Image 1 (tube, rainbow, N blue to C red):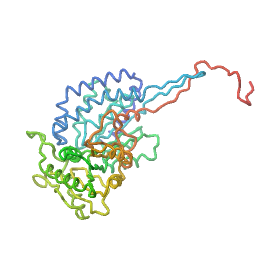
Image 2 (cartoon, rainbow, N blue to C red; image 1 turned 45 degrees about the vertical axis):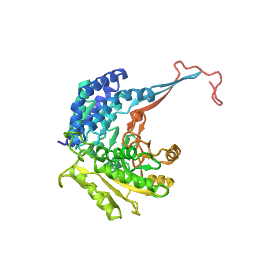
Image 3 (cartoon, rainbow, N blue to C red; image 1 turned 60 degrees about the vertical axis):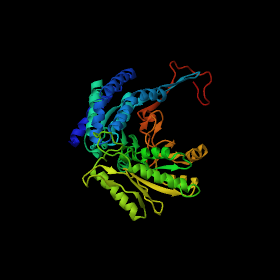
Image 4 (tube, rainbow, N blue to C red; image 1 turned 135 degrees about the vertical axis):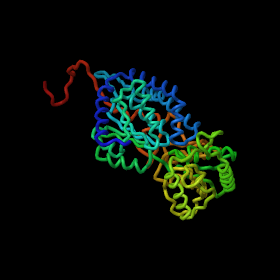
Length: 456
């Protein structure tokens, strides 16, 4: 049940008190608690995975992978803290110089439905390590996963006023005057509303990880099944409900048009054979249901709109089992002939195909978006890849790999409408503490030569 404004205010007051004590604890103390949290995640991994699958619908293999990422985040955060936030020191003849990092204060973490454990966990852990307190709002579509996370953090020894669950209105939460910063993962629409709401408060840190109209280019790609396997994972894993999913597939209609034709045919045939079902099915499906019937209807409307603009359906996106079902078949639609193609992130398993005239044209198409999260290039020609890498305007570029996912030891995030301040990945920790430059002279001495105009 959503909390009232007064209840939300009380959460922030408590978090402020918690911060004032938590920031004074040693880094060794905070690490020891987070190590206990890691052990609790490992011990409860099956329960958390089951909770994620039950709430979200994704297959258990997908949920177990998510829990594994949650566990791995602890050690990666320790490494990134040592690498990025350790005190910097330099000694000069007349002074010592240091840079120390201090926690900001009370942060709001707003979690998404598609990774209800991994993504907020990836914010909360570094925030706690750096000495901040957290007011956590899980997605209203997957609240139980968030509740379980907070329960385990408290069991590990994080004080209840240092991490507090707040299932209230997001708009009300971010307007609280005790807020020092917000880490948000979710839709571009909501992210923009947060940015605008806090635009008059430059003292508050706003870090947004939003979506992408991501493109994958195929040129001289090699084996058809290898290409297809990469594309299926890029476009349809987690039922297309990842911000890193490929939304646009760009294949040549010029000199290598035959390759493009073969890739499309093979992809459509393989998509027809995907196993789709509930997470309890045996054997396990590749794709589970979408998060809601409203989400399904959004993709149906997008498909209809693209057809009205001149798109050609190659494989129809449709519901399985009637209009109240969340299970769907993925869709593939050729949008090459649409003159003014909408630059939208359709958050589901609907892949748009665009035929390019050349590799240079393919790069131009890929960059024709206000988003800039991730791009992919499938090619056996390394010169083509490095040419594309130099030109593609995205925060992540993948070569012969699915666009979905990113290694935890590098920054995660994008440019343009895909976000700001990189609240995810290896560099998350950089936004959890503000640097303070120290110039230190323990025993001051009068210099032998004074500046002109000073007489003592």
